[in-house]
Image 1 (cartoon, rainbow, N blue to C red):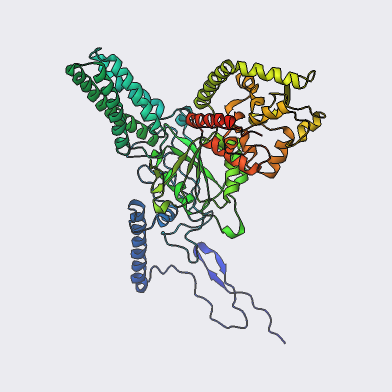
Image 2: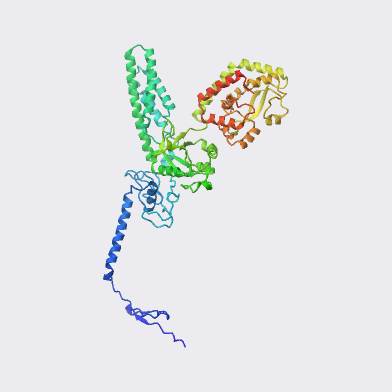
Length: 605
């Protein structure tokens, strides 16, 4: 028979309490524990406890040193990870990284208190729920992964929102004019030469890129160009002054004024460049930027923009197209390349930086040619930047060279200049060619009496706007649909001798001078096309629709290169887009001169 259960023994406790003691399991017979007594520290364990305290103190001191002193031997990416894990304070002028504690909610620089509107530090930990480590890499962790070196965007400064429309040339150009005009305060004897030199110097500075946007601002980089332009303008004006005045004293006095104004230009440039750098560092002036790319260069650019505000850009995020063969991105992305337009509007972006994008070049160009990206400043990291193959005017972010791409659309002051030249050319041509226009009217009327002299047809203009183009009638179409959908009429029997002559000499296009005066067209630009063919060619050739970002023209670069009539549309689109992206008044002049040569050669349709 099994033994009857025994009641558990009791142990007297403090204050008369009775503490029941659990009996050990029957399978194991162990002696009952002794009553609870406070025996105090065991002297035999004291050396071990002392060693543990020393080890803990040593670890605390090591962590404290890591917080105060940044190890110089670590690579940049290792530094960033140690910052995120140890909670190290940001160095002077550096934005906080993921995992850093907020300090007064703003970034402190150079020992000064945080400025109003400066970026707050990241308040979340480097990894949710992960304990803080002493900067050691976790076993098996990829040091180049996006999660271990994440660079997140930060809030825009309040003061920078009020100065978004300001540009550096708005400060630099007035100071240059003031410095060049300073000799007028001392003497008015050379006022003509002084004003001519001021205007000529500013023009040479503009053509030399001295008023263009720059990310790295330094007077030393600009000094050779400034000196060369000043020397050229002063030499031109001095030669003219020597021809107009025989007095050697007059020329010597004028050269002294030139030396004074040139010295003041140098001083003014140094002061304005210093003011620009200070304003950028304090984030009084900055522009939002999105990086198009997801590789190591994009990650490095994001880190540099966060760390160094003197480049005048606020990092707003990265976008890129990802493919299975491209691997894991090195940065966190706002979205794929197709979301660029939406992110531009959402983040109020002013600048796009094209780095090591995984997208093919045709896809990238198609996205950058959309309306949302056309009006933004575009900077490009050269593909072979390690070889030193970059532009004549060097610019860089950190040690990464970048090239500024001009606005590849015609607008603002450039469009005003082109529009003014169009009006002058159209009025002059209508006046000089009025006898020829009258002769064409008579000839067309005699060839087809009662059919009308002018022919109006709907065409597609800038941004898809429809308008009626005016031409001399060279044939009679069967119906309206026939005129809208027939591509080539070469060898058509409906074209008479007069019409064939007008088409060969392009004289049938002369009434379009009236379209130019109305603002529907321009003198030089992509030729307008009918809506039916615009829809068709835009579907077949992605670059064709990009032609409509500028006004259509009476003549174009494609036409003077032999692409008229039944010629490849892809070649026309390439020439038209090349013209748009490299437009200048001199390019317009060359196209007009070559068009006149084509007319006399009879190279029309």
